[in-house]
Length: 181
Length: 197
Image (cartoon, one colour):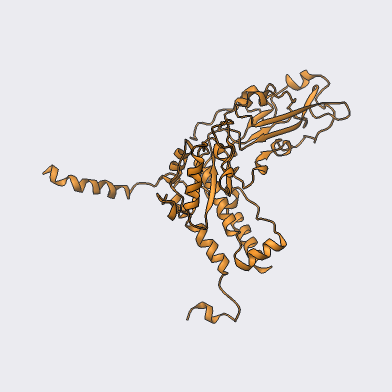
């Protein structure tokens, strides 16, 4: 008797899924958040006074397995200061057609200047436009920040910048979200 | 008999260009064509959770003759390049190509003699999609941006006018902004403004 019903059982399964909730996400209208530490587009962070954290050391470019990062450092002068310390990145480019979002550059960064955002909608129709320049990668100026070049506002020594309180873009110490995939 | 008879002369309910482009973008049929790990994400995009059927493209055509979109998903080796080109040549016009993932777009981390450094060396690419591999949302974003490009394609006399006068292509907007209520309204307004001019 059971073998007689077997072919019908299959239809029963199909029928029962009609009453199950659909798992489909309607992406462009309803965008679900990524995991909080998802590797998305990069961001070059700033100190609380607006100076760039990047010191142009090129460690990110050396760490990159795909050779996607190009950095050209230059010397800060007292008249034109972009970052505390000696040097800053005059040219900073990330080629998103090479970048594999592995995050080795973030691990290599000694000043936590380079971090990753959760933004991922990067598709474009030209190879040229997918090489992001420093202007596109730099974090926006928050209130209280000032567009460099300008003198060091937090103090005269490096310690005032690097041993101070946590700064914007530095998410260490924040509780980890657990309710997202 | 219908609504168009009640309208004063010279008014059509839409343009031929608008209707043609709309029907082209609403049923883009991709060729079943995966070369590497990106194809896994492409399969995920076609499956239940992301469901490409919402954009009229659930049928990955097994034959290139019935496909109008080629998603180059994965690295193209020098040996595979002629095959890719043949598949492209077998597809009927109009056809579009998405280079999915960094390997197809530029060679990615495989900067060596075995891999074609960007599939645009062999076929014309309409949309480059970074990511290694791109998540399904990124692929859908690329497809939706391609939809916008298709809607922007001129026909006949308009194409000739564009060639003559040059034009500014429509700006590509991230899909999470493009498909909000405001984004949809803005793109509709841009569409009608273009038709009026």
